[in-house]
Length: 163
Image (spheres, rainbow, N blue to C red):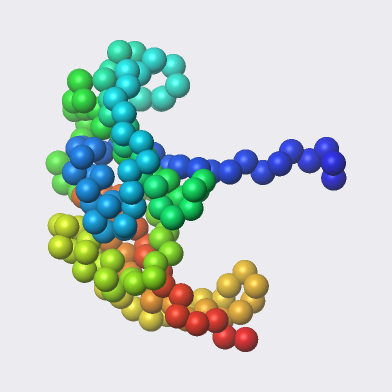
């Protein structure tokens, strides 16, 4: 066991956005996240499998409650502006697209904030039960919606754990 490589920690997922400022305000207003970093940078042309050397971008990293995990990066192409931005947002989740799962203390309130911010709501708050990894039944309230750039969020609130 001493030779085992430690599990790496996934700290952040970064998504491409149309407007980093507008997206950051959505994450602040709807999910209660705060800005951890906001910086322009020029692409090297080697690290990302998109864009090209010299592209000017802006990266805003939003932070949830945890100091290490739960961050979401918002990456905007500033110059040149990307030409492949879809004009319409999805109504279904395309294959290969991440689904962000949020643990909430108030699912219904999160849905109302998302609606007020202009999000498309997919599922209104609904009570449901799931069997957890520990085998216990968990009663939840869940809902789902898209952010303003077409990223999908499932928001769940734990009501009770049954023995």
